[in-house]
Image (cartoon, rainbow, N blue to C red; front, side):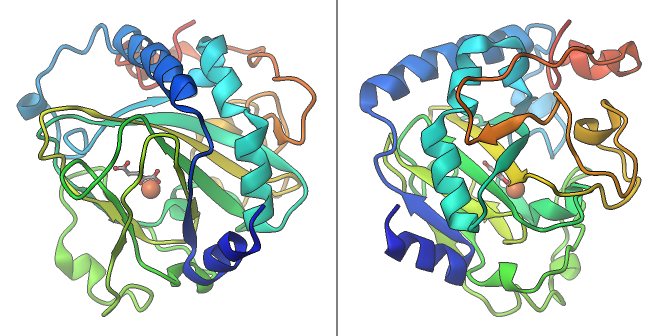
Length: 283
Ligand SMILES: O=C(O)CCC(=O)C(=O)O
Ligand SMILES: [Fe+2]
């Protein structure tokens, strides 16, 4: 792992690692992902304008590694895990969850937020690998980071789920005040990594093609549940507050000899709505 990339990640809280995947791998996975998303979303036939503002930022499908064995190979690819562990400076990682984020052609921006605030994980060694299946520029949903914003070890919940975030909500956050957003252009095969505490956003997709991205969220093995805020990754296996987050829903991701099996217990039908809409795996 290049030392300059680790140094940059420590300073900025994000880094682009070029050429991780070959073009043929990317083309192969792109088709598998597109088919998986189509299948997951088969009951959701709404057009962009009929969706909520949050959904106009992206189509979201979580834990594709569970129901699509080929995507499991991607999520648990040791090249991603090795880089993520080197950037965080930890020896073992688990997967929190994976998710595809398709910013549709014409999709709006992704509002500024910090990921860690959405996750009940006490320790803050968390990182997202963001893998785009097209070149990404200022025209099609480019991701942008507030450099250095991960250095303050505090989580700030920003509600991006119920509509466009008002500027007044962001104005007084010291980590992003007067900081210029650092937008990244990526080529097919490159992967962007960001720390769970790094504030970020994404531009709208003004192109005529969907921006298909697969992301994998890793956390340090041995991390504990911080609070009782609901999250599938801990509530599904019944991890209590204070307990180490360790179950087949969040398997070891690095280092591993072989990809894990799908979780034994399926998602309860209390969440039928999410299953029907394709956010979560079907049974
Ligand atoms: O892809 C996007 O538009 C947003 C990505 C993001 O917020 C994330 O991966 O944490
Ligand atoms: Fe995010």
